[in-house]
Length: 225
Image 1 (cartoon, helix red, strand yellow):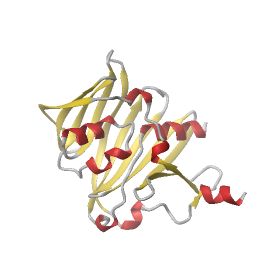
Image 2 (spheres, one colour):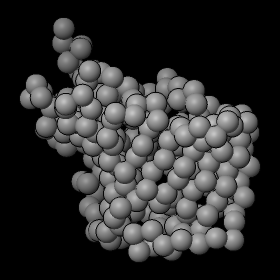
Image 3 (cartoon, one colour):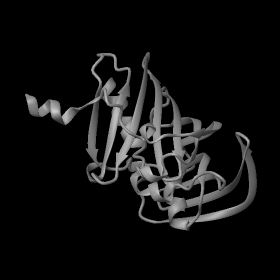
């Protein structure tokens, strides 16, 4: 069951960028509810920790009677993602490093071309003004609400393989962070959606974007066998 949760988590999001020169910049903690139609009985909450040049994602899931909190970091120099479980049930604090080139996007979001269209609609989400954007591809349509006042995500988009909003922002040359989204296939069936519930200004330190020192690299454990 745990491996399935990890697999779903990895297929949903591949994230973040380290730029320690900006690590003390003003940031935000953004909480949102995420709905993955492929796993309808999984409750998912995402907590983004972002500033100008840094991002860390916490994914909280409730699935088959178990609560799991996972964190995701990326190592730009190593072109890899670091994934760990907070308070693991087996008490073994281990993080896993996965090369980003070995990850495949969720097949539902694996598209060849897309086009973004900014609509003349605005909406306030969690106290932040947003613009509506439509993103159309050969596999799905995505409507999302872009908060231009929040840190830009374009520099992170290449690390997210199953997050079409980020690709839309990068491809269209937009700026900001998506606070709500609905993704449907070409027949109108829901694939995924999210809605932000809270945006909190936060001052981060460099250590907030580093894997905690009490976690052990799983690859080192394997070499000892």
